[in-house]
Image (cartoon, rainbow, N blue to C red):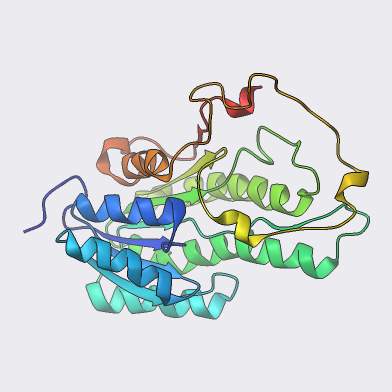
Length: 261
């Protein structure tokens, strides 16, 4: 029998193939949860699955593009039918997307970022609610310091808007779903060692709007460098477990004080 803070619980993690999603899925499994690993392609999700299974945990890899609501609905249904319930959802999948001046950013690029980050979060939570309502549970959403505490990411108007929107959505959801004992919280990471840069597409004219900012002693006050996915995963575990049973509608910054500069 599984033991740990998440023993007997079923968790859904989007973007589980790398970075924060992978680290969190592995930790949740180590704490006893059965984990559904939703990822754009199952190749990377299966790597996470293999690590969990090698450690004695239980996980399933599911191909899911969160920018496609039908994918999300089908994936959530698959988890519910397989394990009978869903206790926690970590809506983590996202992209940086296009970085360009507002004047030259293509509408299609704006839409792609919002559809993945904001609508994808909405769909993930929406389709999980019927399962979460049965016994209550926890939702954690990955937002960012960008759009919430910092606004200096040149060209990232779409990304920052999507991240600010996630925080507003989480607060609305926390209040609406409180009657069902469903908690909703948001994590706002700063610079973390992940591969999200692979989903970043800067335009050639970014230099025209760049405002130079220099930090002679570096922009990471606490540790003099980016955080690690495992550090964020510890926060995710706290917010998904019963240790945070009275915490809902709250954003938590996990950035080593970076956003306070």
